[in-house]
Amino acid sequence: MTLDGMNVLVLTTNYGVEQDELTRPAAALREAGAAVTVAAQRAAPILTLVSDRRPGTVVGADTAMAEVVAQEYDAVVVPGGTLNADRLRTDQNAQRLVSAFAKAGKPVAAVCHGPWLLVDSEVARGRELTSYPSLRTDIENGGGTWRDKQVVIDTSGGFPLITSRRPGDLDAFSAAIIRTLRSRLPAAPERAQS
Image (cartoon, rainbow, N blue to C red; front, top):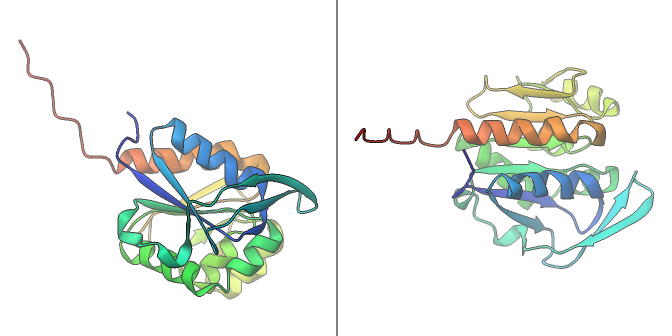
């Protein structure tokens, strides 16, 4: 079952996002059939980093976050990268979008340092999630329960919340997003028997 007809939004700043945390989930979602839109703070090139230090590839932004209407998308993905996540967590457009997805009951996914945005958007409260280990105290102070697992899927709070710890978890993270989106597709009509 493909994700044809599903639209996924990825939120990022224009500098400091962890390369693989942006590109690998987007590629996996596209391969599964979803349309992926990368929204940055500005509709300008995104300068990625590898391991928060070395320059990575330059990725094009499809649009600016200020122009995005959450209702047009089926899920949102928040990549990490320390610099990216630290800037993104205080961005009012990013907070508005994550909150809108949560209120609409749509999947919210974040990896590594990306859950900082979940804390500042107040969608981590009362939820179970994971992140890069250094965020544990922030998540707990924000009312969440931190788990040291490759991927955590929490469906208890009205919307699916999918989180992972680090780039080494990206295959499991991407698979969890795809599985969650597939579960939300309408059931295929049964074939008429001849």
